[in-house]
Image (cartoon, rainbow, N blue to C red; front, side, top):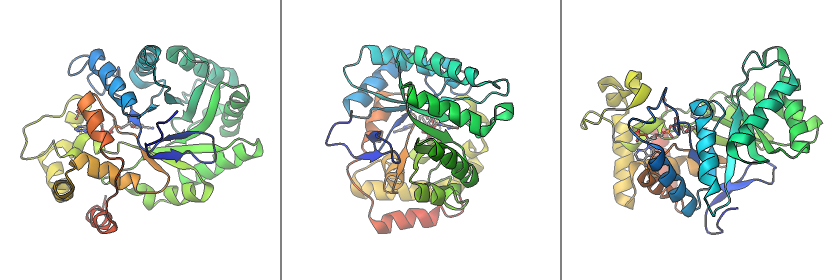
Length: 319
Ligand SMILES: NC(=O)c1ccc[n+]([C@@H]2O[C@H](COP(=O)([O-])OP(=O)(O)OC[C@H]3O[C@@H](n4cnc5c(N)ncnc54)[C@H](OP(=O)(O)O)[C@@H]3O)[C@@H](O)[C@H]2O)c1
């Protein structure tokens, strides 16, 4: 599945070996948050998909709710014409009206149909919610679908340490491993190092899929006081994308640029490499253009020195 030269990570004790860097596709087809159709289009996303697969980045993270199914639909269409085998991680959304196991199976079937596949490689519970269905029943339903061959590996997302332990314990009873906990993790969002999530994942051998690893573009350094580039979509309402927000992160962006300049790397590559050098952490940066994909690929194949890693960790301790 993965070109042999590319750095890879095994997702927990599963058979899934993926590139050490994935591609996030929340913005693919999403008009509500990301402004799809205005500032970027399907053609650009198709070219991004092609650039990623050509470079060996074959792990794509999507969800049934992204673009109300459009992200999965686009991936399904792009995969059809592609010569490369692709690893798809999608997500089940635990809506409160989903109270019967059959509704979970129906959601999975709809995802498979949009993707044009008979199996999804990784199926994650998007948020730790289960309402009247119950956590155990939800996980049992997914475990049964692993046995039925529709899911290759199960993951969770946004789970606390306690919720992760509970999910891991239930799945263990049925002999099904837990592959990942997908959580927000970047130099500007390091909560999982303090709240027990990272420690629990390491102890249980569960990989971390790091979402928003570029802090939605902030860690690339392209948004800031000295540039006039306005963020698109709902980021315009995010206080981090204001003069005060930019001032707060300036020392971090400066350090990323300094390290990058010394190594002939971009700030984005340095920020992603900082995550890649953490064991069992796979960043999944969102990308809208082939140029962004190619830039992000440059985060692989080298390592920050321990001193550089420590400097960035010290500068971002409060985040
Ligand atoms: N499980 C969850 O609850 C959850 C929540 C959020 C996200 N996610 C997943 O995580 C993925 C990544 O998160 P995200 O997309 O929100 O944030 P992100 O990866 O931190 O930032 C992505 C954005 O940064 C910009 N960018 C990316 N690479 C760049 C580069 N090399 N140079 C310059 N700009 C670059 C692009 O936006 P612009 O060009 O417009 O600046 C891109 O859309 C999502 O796509 C999704 O799959 C999951």
